[in-house]
Length: 166
Image (cartoon, rainbow, N blue to C red; front, side, top):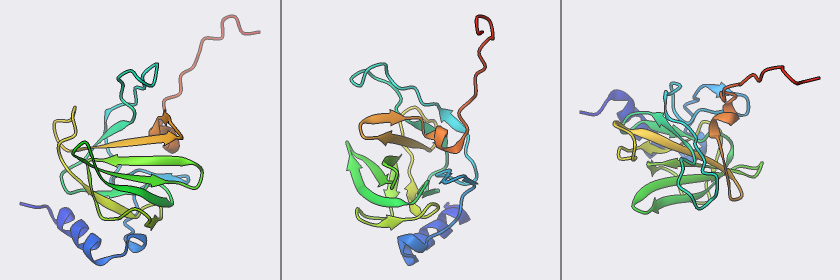
């Protein structure tokens, strides 16, 4: 049985243009969480030492099947389709960053302009490494993968010892 939020999100997608489908998630500066309410982090960003090595090039956020997924910032959808059998949405932002969301059943198409908080699709189950549905949220500049949590100011601060510092 579908939850009320799933039904409402699907209705919003079917009757709203992408630039008017606002359901503002919690803001954090210019960037926003792609899920609301603020999700738990299931798997952290763990980039490989070299591009060709395995690693986790994004973060996995806890969610549920059919949950609305939001654009984290203003931009243009550059891809909405399947990659290796997984539904993916990618948004290019004016500052040269590209955010990706998977597995997400797109409600937008390539070329659509989105604003931060617009619904870009609905979360699906099936992401590897997650027991339930979770969103794999990626971020890159050109070919360099970045930690998307840094956009939100949630990256942990580590203090170094003062020993040896003049």
